[in-house]
View 1 (tube, rainbow over the protein chains, first blue to last red):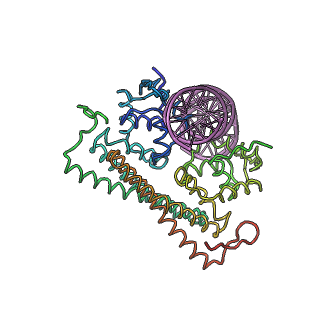
View 2 (view 1 turned 90 degrees about the vertical axis):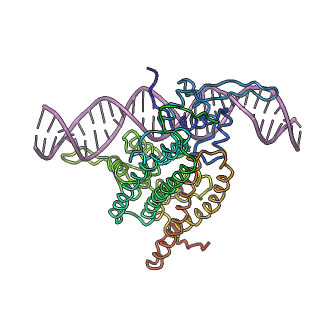
View 3 (view 1 turned 120 degrees about the vertical axis):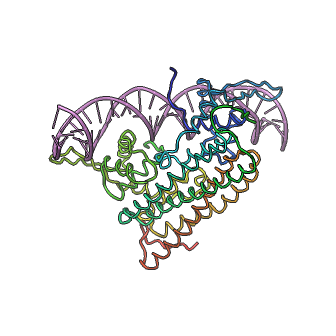
Length: 202
Length: 202
DNA sequence: GGTGGCATGTAACCGGTTACATGATTAT
DNA sequence: ATAATCATGTAACCGGTTACATGCCACC
């Protein structure tokens, strides 16, 4: 088998963007440079090699556009194995570990979720995220109580800040679920993951 | 001159912990494994080499403790150049770039701040952080309005989540300032680092 | 004699950072 | 001319990840 080594976050971010709309490396750099997406670097030294690696694995494919006047562009598109890899990533279960160590990654996954898993998938994700947060926050509060004596004032405040951040995320999950529910009533629904695949991007 | 290459975040985290209390690599690993500190790996492959690099630069110094029974421990302490480096890092100005790209690093700095810069330093930091957040949040809201049409529902919700996170941080800065003010009234004050530095009322 | 905790380390691998190189076109 | 924008790339360097290696002790 070819290298099963896992795709880094940047790879998924690129795959997610490409699955919505074919783009050149330069387009993607501009997206990273100008939008609040995750927080990836727009440096060519990160993006071009990452695109090459995705192409080597067959997750994206490129075509060179020669245009009169301007320099040639290489436009990348997600292939169907690429879309499958994106779907698998987005659909991973929410673990407590990920909540603790990589909340940003969780939100990156969510941001690509609706076109890939539909609203039902988003709702499932949010519910399991809420469950993890509901169990994690009290345990953090307990730890904070235990550590109280050992922490400096600013250390204690920083911990308070982290906890409030999690509380804000939790309250957002409630909000997001309510938005989804409202929309789903109006707009019938989008299918969930497997089976009849309709979704043509852009 | 020796390598001026900058110290990675993990290095500062270690330096910060060591400046509070001498510890072995193993102690530090346990701290990372069991407390919500930043979110560093407790892997030996990260920590031991990082400690060695700090020692090579003279920022920490180690002494080997031979104990009957247990295996020897190597206990690290911050040196005075190490404390100076920590202070310089903690005292760096808050830039919008850091707010956007490395908020976690900002909070790590804050968590080590009080013993190093005193409460006045903490207050200065919080005020400038609040200023950055106050200018950044509205610009994010604007961007969100502009992007509305291009985003999927989950993309839009993820952006909302990010903004709410920043709002929570901002409200925390207000809270933290009020806590600092309260304590400073009761407990006269902690000195800042060297000379008696008085609080700039800004 | 095996497991598990204390304790320190190394080595291969990989990807992100920084800086540099190239080159065409348009605007000043 | 030259700067700026479009556009793609490479190479050195560095540190984090993962996995492995070692060794001592306590306890069952």
